[in-house]
Amino acid sequence: MKLNRFSIGTNLAVAAALTAMYSCSGGQQQAMQGAAPEVAVITVEPTTSVLNSTYPAQIKGKTDIAIRPQVSGFITKVHVDEGQHVQKGQVLFTLDQVQYQAAVDQAQAAVNSAKVAVDNAQIQADNQRRLFEKNIISESQYTTTANQLSAAKAQLAQAQAALASARKNLSYTVVTAPSAGVVGAIPNREGSLASPSSAQPLTTVSDNSQVYAYFSLNEKDILALTEGGKYSLDLRIDNMPSVKLQLANGTVYPIEGKIATVSGVLDNTTGAASVRALFDNNNGMLRSGSTGQVIIPEITEEAIVIPQKASFELQNLRYVYVLNDSSKAVTTPITVLNVNDGKNFVVTSGLKAGDRVITEGVGTIVKDGVTVTPVTPAAEAAPAAEAAAE
Image 1: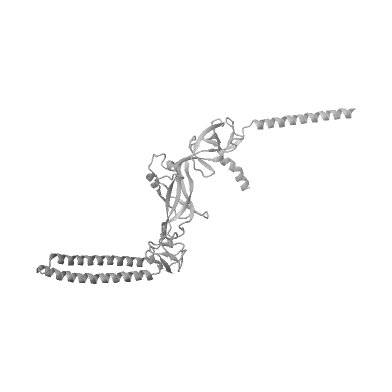
Image 2 (image 1 turned 120 degrees about the vertical axis):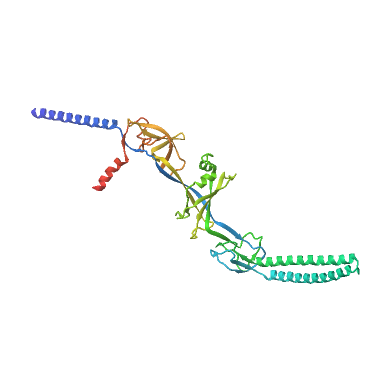
């Protein structure tokens, strides 16, 4: 019986202990559930923000001149090759000159014949003038001779004009570069027929010492650039920062450029204006016809910058949770720039320097009016730093 009383007493003691442990554990859980959650918080301060906007661009040489012959003929000589640098006046092509040289010889012969006719008419007119002065012939006879001299001179002038035209056509058989640049594709070689009416030019000479990057800005971009017409477009262009050019392989061209012009007319079909940025190309790295992206930086002084994850959107409006003096989350509407880097927003209104903004748990553990325990980025980084030190 003593053994039984001892067993019963032991069982009661164990049960009491388990009850006490359970009560303590439940109290701790309730206490933990009632504690303010720890969330990351940043204190916003003004800073300088640089955000980039990119626009697809088509690159063209400062001058892209299509080379076309001014007379028809077979190509007898190609003096240059594709990609070759040429100077102004350098010979590019020679066309068959036989028929044009023959035309020059024929025109020259006509001029010589006309000169002889003028000389004969001049002699006849001089003789008739002397006879008329001596009243040997009538005035009408002298006038007829003078008119014949005038007609001979007119024929000489006509022959000389034909000779000049023939010589000009002959000169056109030698096709030269109208400016310095780089030779483009040469689709036709020796033996091909060249004509001014051909759809395809003989080649293209591009002046690539400087290149233009053409891209488009829509109507909203133009209004934003002028701040809704507050500033003139020319003034804003002059004050725009330098732009960069991202090439097709993703690399950024090492030389910065400058916005040169913005078209004064919006395209009716696209609603966009053509914009031209100018880049120096002394090393010839950029070629006419290539593509890229123009990068325009938007610099904002005294900007309030927050992580995108710190905000949420509701009915096309954006909000953040700001901690008040009681560490309670307060829903605060904000406006941000349309341009962003994919990670951060530049806040244009709704926040001021010194505001504490919650950056974690937005929309999950953090709701409006919830009391939280703020954790600063420095406090979050401390454990990791200590672990790294160990």
